[in-house]
Structures are given as structure tokens and as C-alpha cells.
Image 1: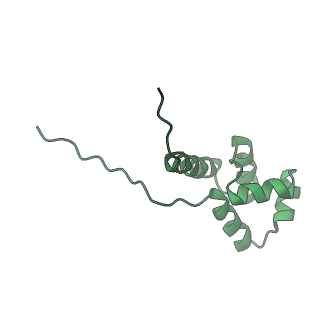
Image 2 (image 1 turned 135 degrees about the horizontal axis):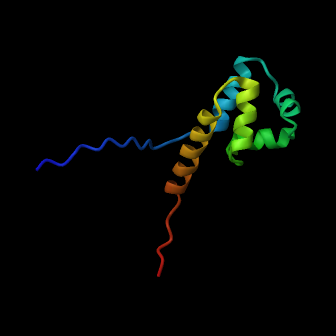
Length: 96
């Protein structure tokens, strides 16, 4: 019996979803300060999202959808893939 072929794409590098956010802001000529004010969050929080230090929560994903027109699922999936990549990149502790 033949084993089924399983396609698994596992890139060796994944960028933070904030890079995509920054690109979209630049394309639309929206300043970080402007987005922060529209979303009611600090510029520091936006900067942390852009750098990948803070996750894109479902609430933030919905706000990005509202202000940028990019579906919340895109942002959540992008962040999930990035966080999974980070987790896989960390040395795993072996449980006793």
C-alpha cells in the first residue's frame, strides 16, 4: 500500500505580521500615529505590533480590518504562523 503524500510547507524564515502592516500603512500613506489614534491605542503598541513583539489579538485584527479593509482572519493567521515559527525555532526543553 502506498503512503499518501503529505505536503507541508515549513519555511526557514517567517517575518512578523507587523512588516505587512507597515507595508500597508506606507502604501496608503497612513502614519503610525494616525492609525494609533484611529484605533485608540498607543503608538508604542503599534510599534510593538510592527516589530513582532506583541501578538495581533482578535480585537486588534478586527480593528485593522475596519481601518485597513484587510480581513481579520488574514491578520490572525499571519500572526499565528509567525508565533508558531518562533515556537519551533526555540530549543525545546526535554521533560523528565
